[in-house]
Length: 209
Image (cartoon, rainbow, N blue to C red; front, side):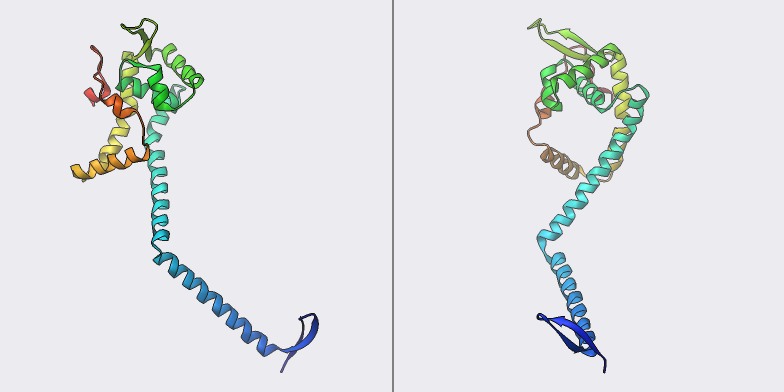
């Protein structure tokens, strides 16, 4: 029998080493059992399972967005533009004759940021401003032929990715995808813009896609 000296309850006392080992084994066994039970409860807990699915969805959205923007990013980098330029060009191309206020509402950026991006797009010949017929002080935004060509170049690989991802889904499945994405950004104004008709003489990307 081996005795060891331990400090316990404000005094030293000799304890049998065999008892210490036995207690240590029981402690480790109990800890393993507690961890196993905790893991089992986590897996059987609907809330925990739901959270696990949501984390997987968050990561899926991250990687989807990364790949969705990667092709346009390379094109934009060639001409010294960024994603802000892409967004402005996209919406002006899709909704010819829109006002600056419309863009501010859609993009949720400051006037200063939008002014800088618009100035660069206009100076390089991708977007032009025209006076509104009903209010000469109001400036309406249109893409030029060069802007339309660039918008087409940027959207082509994105259309290809979307068609591949949606392949095999029926009409209801596609509508479910649209409903999910719309629910992720409630209150956006694109649905209102969809009700507008292109102004006369303007061709949108949807017409040629």
